[in-house]
Amino acid sequence: MKQFITAGLAAGALAFGSSVWAGDAHTWEVEDNFENVGFAIENAIIGAGLVIDSTSHTGEMLERTRPATGSDKVIFTQADIYSFCSATVSRAVMEINPANVQFCPYNVFLYETPDRPGIITVGFRDYPEGEMDQVEELLGGIIADALMLEE
Image 1 (tube, rainbow, N blue to C red):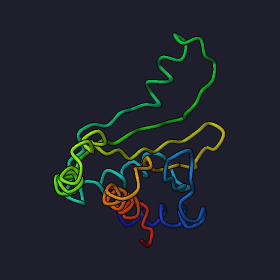
Image 2 (image 1 turned 30 degrees about the horizontal axis):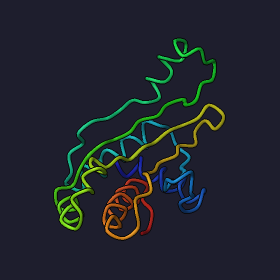
Image 3 (image 1 turned 180 degrees about the vertical axis):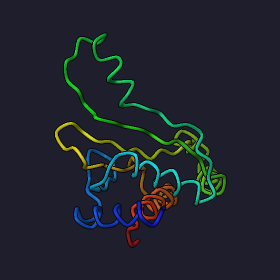
Image 4 (image 1 turned 90 degrees about the vertical axis):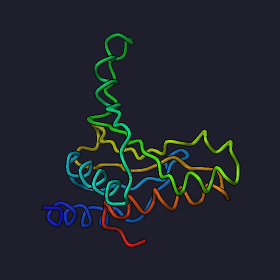
């Protein structure tokens, strides 16, 4: 089943090219449905030997609280954030600088907007250059695995 899902993801990701920058985030776009992309991201995280600590359903929260905020704008069709940590990478970057604890756990997000149905954006935040490059390599590898991209 993963081959079927990821084949569609790979075709979609290739159609949109490589990563794009979106406000201090590394992002990729793929043409697929949200559930397939989320499933592929979850499997890539677990496949890297990591445990998902939490999944934030940010899109649902924003939609649920929209009336209470007085807004009529629907931001996302769906949006989730997967949080997890890597003992190996975290130890390496925190041995360099204990203040790097501020970046843990690491997050991969995905979202779909109402104006671009079927286009799922996947990404992670930009980290400081240098000692946090290991984290960006880890997250980029997870997304490459999920979207079947060549690294």
